Image (cartoon, rainbow, N blue to C red; front, side, top):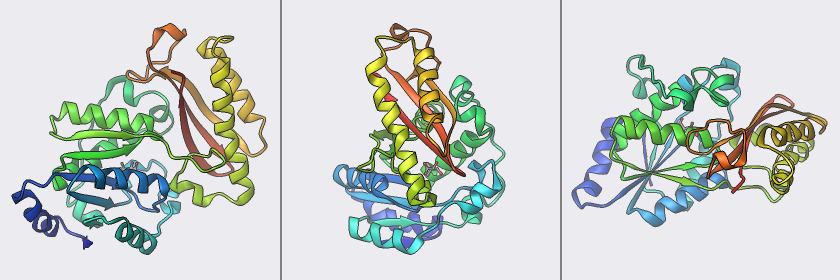
Length: 280
Ligand code: PAF
């Protein structure tokens, strides 16, 4: 595995693959890798001749400097895992390499970046769009892999790719869960054992809600989920919304959407976790 820190070295390393028409798969990450990332990477390795993984904690997508400071960083463990998985290129640029000048682009994704995460983390998706579009221009992958845990991020990346006409196939990969049901996330590293146990109740309640769609309208069911999760000591719901999975528009009745999805953001102690579940 080549470990590369600059865009020019990345171009040199990719050249032989490009010349031979080898397909390039790309998995952008912020490091602190876990089984969820490994699943994306295995899929990329299966589907492409060369897999590039980026490891870059992107400052422009953090609207809270404390969150950026506390974001887990495990570069040596990450490198070892990527080597074991059989990744061809690890791209770990500095902030200056990705942003030689400040990126002042402002994206407007309509409703997609106004609801849910967009409401509580203003500017977050603008930062995601900035960094993902830059990484795409460096790597020029044939396919790029994103986890469905970040459901709204995936919708934004698809939309950004469409609008900027970037010739890349965006592949969404289902959520990977701990045996307890807790969605895998780098942030889980910040949970104590007791908090992990509490946090596993998030998925338990989402899963339980699947059986209640016949009795409740989406808004009522969302309220039920919020109440149940808030009843668990240590958990505090920031939002739970049932939306159409394509437009992300909140739905008032089940027949308003072919793809209703419930999306949650929940604080467990000081750690903010997100999760989602499909109702169809
Ligand atoms: O999902 C993430 O880890 C990040 O938002 C991403 C896509 C790597 C962009 O920084």
